[in-house]
Image 1 (cartoon, helix red, strand yellow):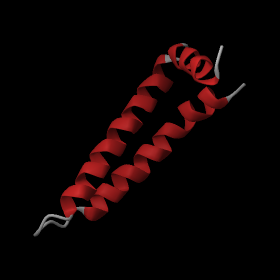
Image 2 (cartoon, rainbow, N blue to C red; image 1 turned 90 degrees about the vertical axis):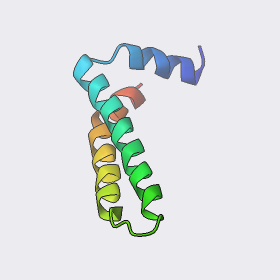
Image 3 (tube, rainbow, N blue to C red; image 1 turned 180 degrees about the vertical axis):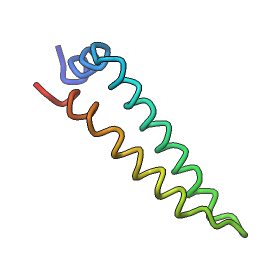
Length: 71
């Protein structure tokens, strides 16, 4: 069994609260990145909100990431 297969199997076995936090973190990262990309359009000042969403997404993803990387 390869590295990615083991990690995928561990992801399937995560408790529901960690899986929810992992998915929420990925969603918030995407939303923050989308806001940062949209900031470069004229007359937009949401760059702080985008950065905060990306930072929050990384913080939220820490517990599930730690659980997935345990051997």
